[in-house]
Amino acid sequence: MARCASWRPRQKCRRHSSPGLPVTCQDCWRPCFRKTEPGHRRCEECEQSIAQLPGADVKLALLAEGDISPDVLDYLASDSDPLVALEVAQMQDHQHDAATAPAGRAHHHH
View 1 (cartoon, rainbow, N blue to C red):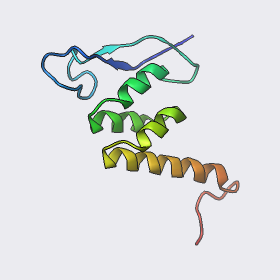
View 2: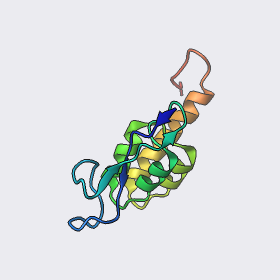
View 3: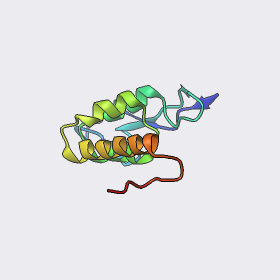
View 4: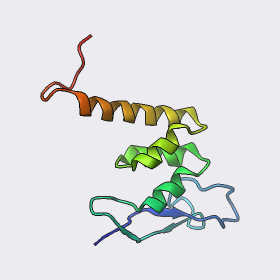
């Protein structure tokens, strides 16, 4: 059985109004270890918790890891931070291109 390898944001840090990147403050974050689907790094609850944080750097780090559930990608696509929304749009375009490209031809010719 796979276990979640994510850090989970905590709401009770006295020093920070919102969590920075994981492990920068142990009051902001704690490890999860919940059971996950095989092949997934983190459970859906951690993914959603991180996606709802206000800081763009944490959400961009989540996106950089890849393997994000479609629901979380859709949520982040309308993020108030344009960098996050743009990153999601590029990921979704890439997934669409990969799904529609003929075998052996990854690039479009205009």
